[in-house]
Image 1: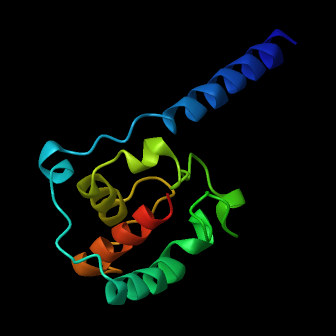
Image 2: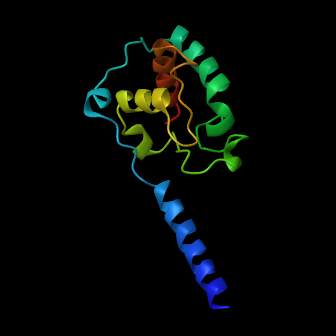
Image 3: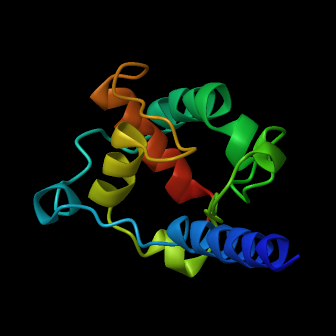
Length: 129
């Protein structure tokens, strides 16, 4: 009986610990954080940016970037609220880096999108404020 109780406590503590791991801050290297968006934010580019967002991001992050996409329930961690002050306070370089590199449930888009497409998507994320 003591063994079952002990294993139950160990399991619960492990589960709690794993939930904290997902909450670690996502640190972006300073050189990447400082990068500037190299793509113009104009009407033509925004149309393409919306298409890219709908193709690659909407299923998890939702149409308005609220983290309520069709795949969101099956994912762990914070999907972000693109309309929030906290999200919008990030530099373009941070958003680019996180999209390109990914981590945990956020896939890397380094091989799925060109740098220009990622920069376009950053513009679209900004429009969701």
